[in-house]
Length: 327
Image 1 (cartoon, rainbow, N blue to C red):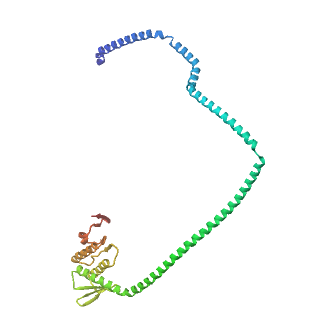
Image 2 (image 1 turned 90 degrees about the vertical axis):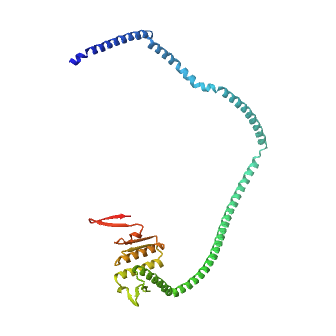
Image 3 (image 1 turned 60 degrees about the vertical axis):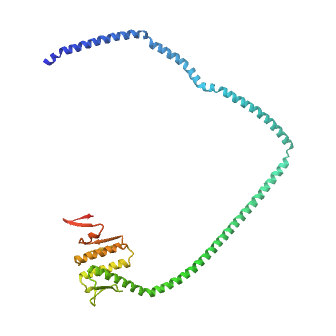
């Protein structure tokens, strides 16, 4: 209450200002009312003017609707003059045409017209008959021409087939000759290929085993025989490492000499091989890749081949779960 009491001078000052504002507004209102006195009957004047406008509105609308038409009056008058001149010319032509018609009617012969009509009908009938005969003949000619063309095509095809038959007979005789030659040369070719594979396998086996005293032979029965120190042993008589190295050597030799496939797979090729022979095998497989193989896949549990491969995919098993790493 003390705070409100302290604001009393401020509030009284504001009240005085508001009262002065009210006085000023009342003065302004008195002035506005005095200024509106001359317009006391303004509504009556507006109604009177609206009534006058309502009386003249139909005439005004009619004026607006016909203003464009009235503007076209001179042009239409000119058109009317042109049409009137054309009408006079047409009347003259009509009179001339009627005069010519009377002349033609005077010279018209109905009997001659009937005779001409009968002759026209007869000529049309004869023309239709001849047209039918002509169409029939044309269809027959077209059919004959088609048959002739077919016969010509068949004759040309027969000549071509005869020529092909002659060529095929000559080719068949040549193929039979080659077949006989190949059949006779088969054992010699096989023997030569086996010798070439054996020679290549011997070089690879020697490089893998680091032993150049042994010689491998890939027999015509597709078996593997090793000769060393004047003694010949079959594949079953070789040790585990020798069997693995011999099998890989023959396979690498076959890939080099006979295969047209540019992808090779090796599954655990280092089994039963010591570290030196593993390194030798890795080098030999690398030489195989350099001879035109686009990709070589090696599946192995050791890291011998990692130094000569482009990509390494490891499968690591941890806590009974497999994890793949790619380098």
